[in-house]
Length: 194
Image 1 (cartoon, rainbow, N blue to C red):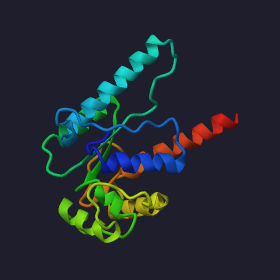
Image 2 (image 1 turned 90 degrees about the vertical axis):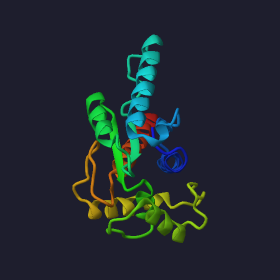
Image 3 (image 1 turned 135 degrees about the vertical axis):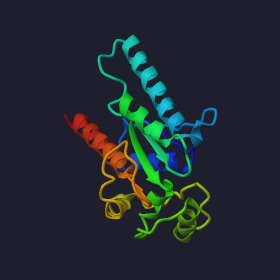
């Protein structure tokens, strides 16, 4: 589940393909404006998780429909972020939070950046590397540089290393979501060999 309806979905779909993580489902939250509100994103993630679990139970599946459910949100200027963090902790949703916006994660694929920024400045910097960037990622986006982006994110805010936690400006713990997708891809590869 993501706050954004284009960039985040494209990025995580690209990462899913990069790791060949077939059992990963990338969803977006764009229902009645919840695409702009972190608390709405968490509630939508809960709703979809619970519906998937009920469906699995009706079909007699002993396993839960999802191992983990992640919600990806920006700090931006949202007033519901603290409520979203509390709700995510209470409901078992793993929350990836980017400050000031998800695009800081994208920028770290290309350059170091540790100075506090606004969303507009981050997006302006992205244009240097992705000409014409308007919330759509090019097919040749360097997903393989996620490790470099992770290192840069951890350098910028070494304490932003767990879900459901807000970090400094700039920061993101989106790399935790990438780690979960990569692990899912590894589990899938191992199970298909065994």
